[in-house]
Length: 304
Length: 218
Image 1 (cartoon, each protein chain N blue to C red):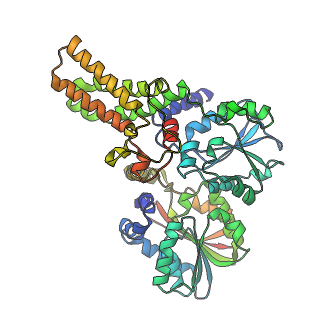
Image 2 (image 1 turned 45 degrees about the horizontal axis):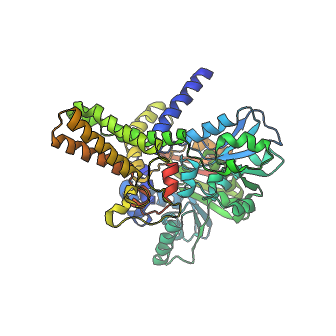
Image 3 (image 1 turned 120 degrees about the vertical axis):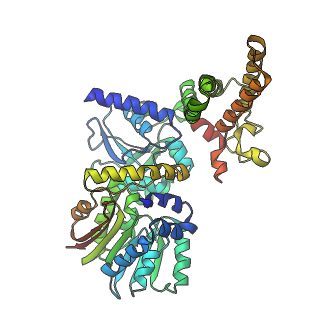
């Protein structure tokens, strides 16, 4: 049974990484980790499946209680910033999970990135629990607990390391490469491999090379966009042109390949140019702005 | 089935009433009427949990009931207030913006003769459903009535399978439009009984995917 669970978790991790833009809600409420007693730490996280499994893995070997609050199946940062992980959700899980009867202390550790959506003072007033914001990343929780609930600078800092950037690349490239597969397989089967290559090359190049590609990073307080319809695409933001630069380089490489190493007609080159531009625009579509929201752009780039 | 689309409607409260009437083929008005007739009497005090745009509260108030409606959405309550004023029932209906999880803080025990809830439990987690039911028990007077109408998980597996087949496309479409969905309530009857109520009557749809339950506090 343990192997089945491990396999199920592994497959869920892959699926939910590839489709990370979609919510994957899991059951809310109380989870015991190890053999917690009345003094054990109480931590809280969102109910995005991937996050819950990662937090539980990070806490392996520690006796603790984990409260899973309703974030509509969305990860902590996106849900808190987007109004889906709120003070009410935290209050609700404290009041309805039965945690009040299980521990003697009243200290609750929330993820630091939930702070944009959760009003600590209101939670404390309504529940009598003292709220502290823990580390950004789940893997820092054991060290944080060992350090008597004190965060180091590293624990406070949002890192956008290569593994996380690759996750973002997969999150973008997978759905974009899967959705057009049906018409491609039916009508243009010979274009399937080149199409997949372009989508994944652009996605991986943008995110893997995020800090090396020239171009400024969008400020977290940015609410501005370009003129007219361009404001709906992050790529046209004058401070976030990495994706456009990658596209220009890719087109240059395509033209060089088509003219020098192969015998591509200019219409073929034009077709690939337009197709890859469509991919870049899809990747950079500013969904919240399209929906009328104006959340900070950098958060969305970094967290998906 | 169409209650999945509630999420689409909730994202645009102004269209909620028209949309929910169309999607339920007029059934929701009959459901509210049935709840009001079977659960309330003139001069009684009723609580409507998750009152939304106030249709159920208005149906009860028209029977001479003093209604308190609570909802977490200020947009829904704005529309409810306008409807209450248009129906000239402002003296009979009190609307409060609050979560169902705040029921333990805001009302004294035995404050109501009837507690009703329409299409709200499907938005709560299992723990929250049980908490709210315990609060309903606390807030009702002895022999007071609880009436809950909601989307429910069908009782037998063939019905569940059929329900899933019909529901899945709607879930996907609703998700694409709103990035949210509803969750049919499982074991609603036993949860109500566990909270200390005696089930009085059950009115379920043919497929068992929509149920109205009447219970009494003993």
